[in-house]
Image (cartoon, rainbow, N blue to C red; front, side, top):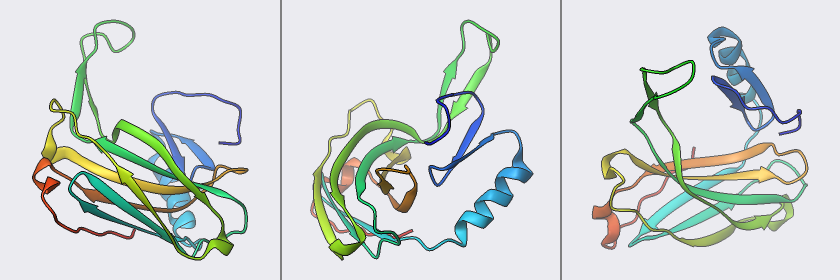
Length: 165
């Protein structure tokens, strides 16, 4: 992100470039609609037996970018014991369980694939897990391509799933 480092709740970050107060739904929706009109690259994720293959192509910009991969879990909650939310139960989505940079590329690279082994911890709820891959420009931190697929332990047998969002 290019603005001064600050983290607060609630916060929304769109395409890695624009941040808004998360409670300002109309402003966020307007920014999302605008960002959706911009050209994006393509990311595909296929999953076979505890390994993902992330395929990236058609990046919209020339600058070098990093290909990133995460396992995320939805539908989590925490009981707050202290602070301004003491006594409340807060719901969470998209909690990052593991995260790694899997490679680099630029627009001139055409299409490239990256093999990504990943593990699922036994305490994670398999119905709520997703794999996320995105391409982030190194200089601007802009997100120029992204995809997500659901994943479960039952997919540790040979299967092939793909997504390009």
